[in-house]
Length: 253
Image 1 (spheres, rainbow, N blue to C red):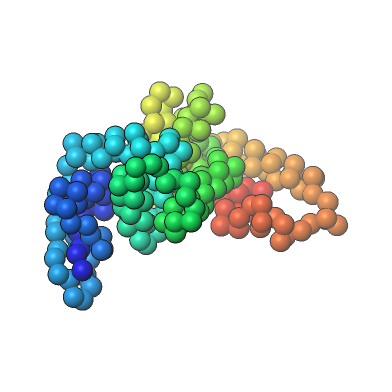
Image 2: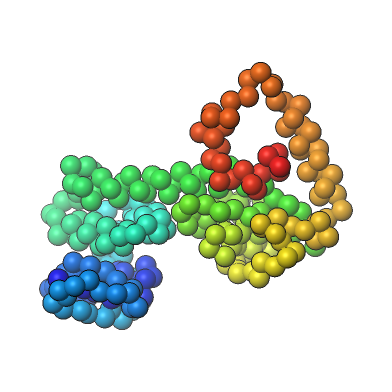
C-alpha cells in the first residue's frame, strides 16, 4: 500500500495529484501528517504543499472539465466527509487520464458518488441562505449563528454580501468556530471567542440593540398569527425546514 501524507488543505491535495504524476506512483490512501497509517504500508510519501503546482493541476482540471464539475469538486471538499479527499483525487485522475471527460458517466461509482455528495453540500448552502436569522447588536452589526452539517458557509457568502450590502453583518458557523464579517465594503473571515455573552450563539440581551427585542416579538406575533392550528404538520415542517436550524430561528423560540 502506498500512502501520501499532506497538510489537509485543498492546495495540498492538488499538490499531491501533481507529485503523483511526477513520481508515477499513485496513493492507495491519503492521510494527514499526524494520522496513523494502516498496516502493511509499502511506501509513505510526504507531500509539501506548493501553490504553483496546485495551480497547474487546477488549471488542467478546468480545461478538461466543465465549470459545473469544477464547482462540484469544491463542494465535495467542503463536505469534510471522511474519504472525500480520496474521492476527489480519484475523480481528477480519471478525468485527466481519459481522452474525453467522464463527468457524466454515472456508471462510474466515483462520478456518481461525487455528484451525490456535491448535491448534498449544495442543498445545505441553500438552507443556510433560507434559514439565517440576524440579531441586531448594540453596535448596529447584525449577527447570525448557524451550525450546518457541511462546511457550506463559503458557498453562501456572496449571496449575503449582495442581499445585505447596506448593513454590517456577521454570519458565524458555531460548529466550526469561524465566520465572515461584512463591513459595507469587504468580506473578511473571522474567528470569535464565544463566551457567556453569546450562549448557544445567541446574543445576550445586554448586547442587543434597543429595538431588537421588539422586532423579535413582532416577528413571533406575525408567525403565530399566520399559523392555522388545525393544519400544523411537524413532519412536513422538518422536511422543508431541517430541525438543526430551529434553535436559531426567532419564530421557533
